[in-house]
Length: 55
Image 1 (tube, one colour):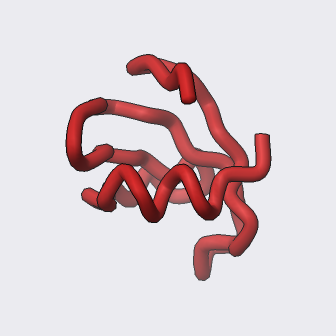
Image 2 (cartoon, helix red, strand yellow):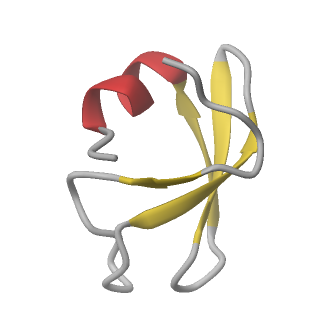
Image 3 (cartoon, rainbow, N blue to C red):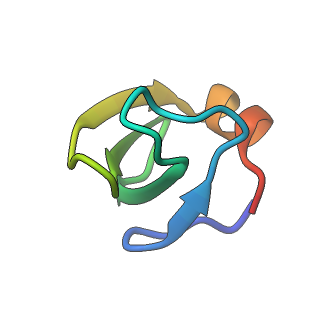
């Protein structure tokens, strides 16, 4: 997958705030994502992101 910092992705599951869109802040073995609904940031493994990405 060709994912870059600044890209906006849609995940299959929604965040508790109701949004399913995330902005990529860091790329590597782990991704740092920021929820576009509430600005909550998470670190998640690359394999999990690639499995749960919709767009």
